[in-house]
Length: 346
Image 1 (cartoon, rainbow, N blue to C red):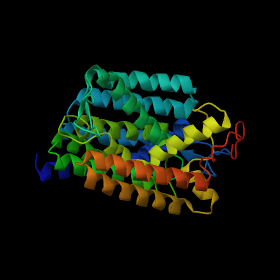
Image 2 (image 1 turned 90 degrees about the horizontal axis):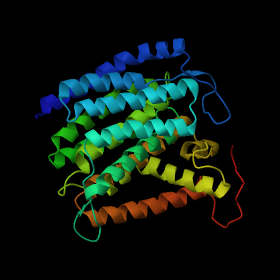
Image 3 (image 1 turned 135 degrees about the horizontal axis):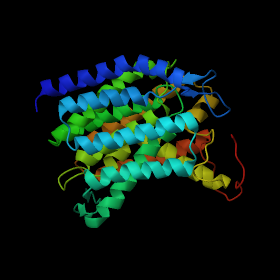
């Protein structure tokens, strides 16, 4: 593959997504795909959702031209995840039904697509996973699908973090000679660039669950396709470091709900963006902070990618710093056993 091929596929992904988004916006309004304001939402007026449809369109066309590996199973899984999210946006599926749908879609990808075959070991050689590759790949993809959906609560946040993360993964894949993964990552950059102008504050259309879960799946697919596959490649700590903002937000959500004595899947209003808004930040300032943190962590991931032990140390140190910062802004409470059943924001 040469630079021209990557550029052509990038332009196709940007153009198709950007052209489709206004049509998807009108379609969403006609079909009742609208995010209605409630105490947990940021928007003050009903907003059209379903942006994942436009992103999938750009993904499909660009992937066909770019000839990505595992094209069939990747597109099938992406379509199933997007459709599941759109249905959830329209009819508000229960958490159990939604998760079952995710497991079904991702299982198809894991069975017939690529898998994580090796993991970096900070204390020695790469670890060959063998039969564990199936459940661990399933867990990895499901985690990223839900991580990106968890953090999608403010204009441009998920799309921008995906864009920065995909640029980092493209860079790493090219440095490693994983041109197939680099092509898919380039497409993810393209669809993010095409959609972000419509999604940045003040947003004209939302990603919806379909779009947020789709972007999470695509990041997982890129890392599974190339960055995590093979004994000579980087380890799982690298994409975790790249996506430190949504990863930290998810960990805090789990801890917070354990502290409050409520189910892990129960929604609340104490995510990263909620807390910064409550501190007086504007929506744009919140996303700028998230972009800055993601850009810094992604740079650190690229610089340490070939040093497994160093990457794990950097990931651990930054993780502890972000968890401390999360406690300071109220995303979690100091653990003293006296908070069970309490909730600051509901």
